Amino acid sequence: MATVDLLVPPTTSQRDPSPRLWTVAEFERMRQLGLFAGHTVDLVGGTVMECTDPPHPFVFTRKEYHALGDSQFFRDQRVQLIGGVILEETAVMNPPHAVTIRLVSKALEAIFSHGFDVRCQLPLNLGQISEPEPDVAVVPGSPRDYFVDHPRTALLVVEVSETTIHEDTHDKASLYATGGIADYWVVDLTTDRVLVFRSPAPDAASRFGMNYASVSAHGRDDKVTPLAVPQSRIAVSDLLP
Image (cartoon, rainbow, N blue to C red; front, side, top):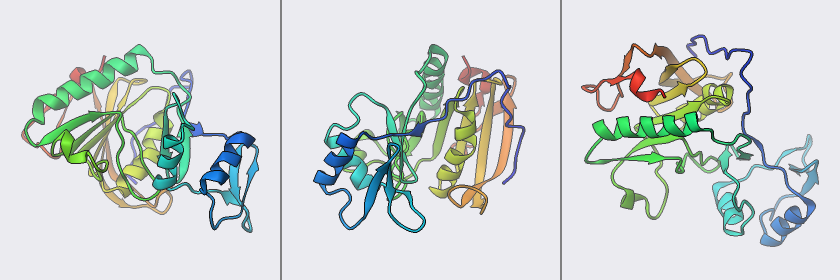
């Protein structure tokens, strides 16, 4: 994987999403729903563990994830399924993060018009065990095209990072590369720049076996161009609050 200086200033408090922990009552409800059929599992410290040798955390599928959602397990919690792990957002979205999502979506809507849909914090179907909800994603088609299932790809995915920069530049990058996302941007509010990840390639050291071979950093005075619309240029200053 190609790298740029992704170090976060030491004063920045990192709050990467953490695995959702389960109560005994929730664990028993999951049993009753039949989620563990064919598996021998136990609840250890709030984590569902598969009783293998050695034991390992139970890998949730998208089907099981949706069954939990339909059964009101998450209620008002914001969760995502990443690599079979249900992650819970631990940080409250602050105004700069919210404003940046709107700035990014408006900038992309201006250049991706007919034939594309710019989605904010909506799911992507990236295989049997992953359903991330990126801050912004540009997908082909129109909203009604995804009435039956979530998009399985995106022309561009953007994450806004302030307290999640490590997650967004490591595991999320690996996930999106593995999912075939050719163009992935991270708007880093800790350093006022946009990191552009491109050229998915095998990478045995990454969590999902792939990552991006090209990573470049762009400051406020620079411009960035989406791969899908090479004739368009967006000022980085238009993406930052």
